[in-house]
Amino acid sequence: MQQRMAEARGLGRQPFLDVHANGRCSDNWYVLLDGVHYDIKALWASAHKPLIATTSFQTYDAVKGFEALGFDVVSGVATPRGLPGDAPAALKDSPPSLNRGDAGLSPLRPPIEVAPGKHFKPTGYWLFLANPKRWRADDWHASGQREFRYLVSKDDSGLVQIGDLGLLRVNKVRGEPARFLVAVEVVAAPAIIGEPDPRFFADPNEAAPVLRAGLQVISAVDALPVSAGSLPDTPEFRYFHEGVPRTTIAIPRSAFLAVAKALGADGKTLAELRASRTEGGVRKLEADQKGSTPIQKERVSKYIERGPIGTSVKKERAGRCQVCEALGKAPIAFDKLNGEPYSEAHHVIPVSKLVRGSLGYQNIMVLCPNHHRQAHYGDFTVEEDGPEHWIIRISGKRLRLDKTRLPT
Image 1: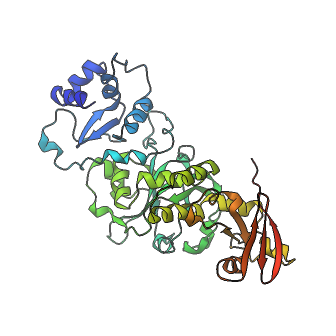
Image 2: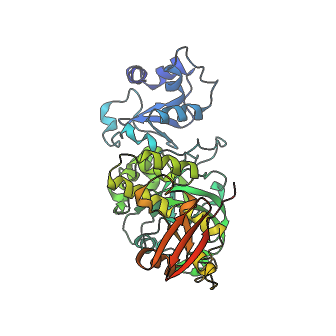
Image 3: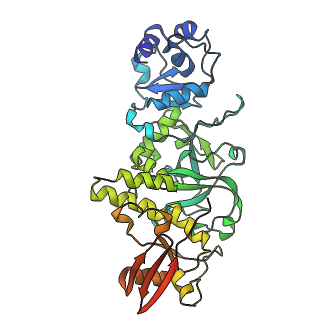
């Protein structure tokens, strides 16, 4: 690949296209390396022996191939600066190349193909634009929440996919540049749905059902916001600076990575988060933790505690406290603002141990806040941990609690 890139720089863009792509460019898709934009289909075809005819494969085949190799792929650049054969002086304002180790920060699947005329072509990477006058994004960020639902532009409703990645941008206000609070992954496809926590809306009615996607934060907990003023003024970063009347915009991978890395996102963390969402992935995490350091184990355990397995168990039991039920008391502690019953997931074998079985759903009791605290700090002992049930002793009483079985 490097040899073909050198050939492109030596020949110049159009002669390289004449040799390897019948003179045609790549419909706005490029490989970006060290400030040079290479036409993606011509480069991909030229690097294969026997050569691939550029009309015999889809652009997205090349996109997937280059991203698997760790290269940065960009699109939506109408007049890219820095083409093969350009003088070095033309590249002085281009952003620096990024590490190939960032290949893990990639969407789960290729972007959806769209008609050539669409202005914002999906890339698998998105900006989610927040108006601070309508949604107090800074207050939300300070709350420490790691999952939320956010607005999607109507014409992107069928293009934002589960597994896509993005950045939450707070729009500029009173002359201050825009800011980027977190990097996120799409974990629920766009749907007409309400935001269950209306506290951060200037008008709580704006939490009503509209088109939203479920997002999970993948950047570091303690990362400071990134100012748009610190980013290059180049075509890749155009919409990182400019205001636009939308809530979602597709962005180039290289621009996403530049900000996501600054926010502390990395491929290993994303892979662990993804694994924590399924029973099979959890088992693999358990196996992979042999020999891990205490810090690594603590990080993974937090994914599990906050992940969807505990949520699934609570949902299966309709938020009812198992101890309250066994004692014949009202099993619902209280209802949340969205009307759902509040409960907590208690891991009988502490997740931090990351031993076999500690991360699975059969290690989870559903408890009210009071009994959850008692399980950790009070008179609460697990006397028997069987395959189908637990025998516990709490405040001098011996109880049997059945383990939850999730639908297969």
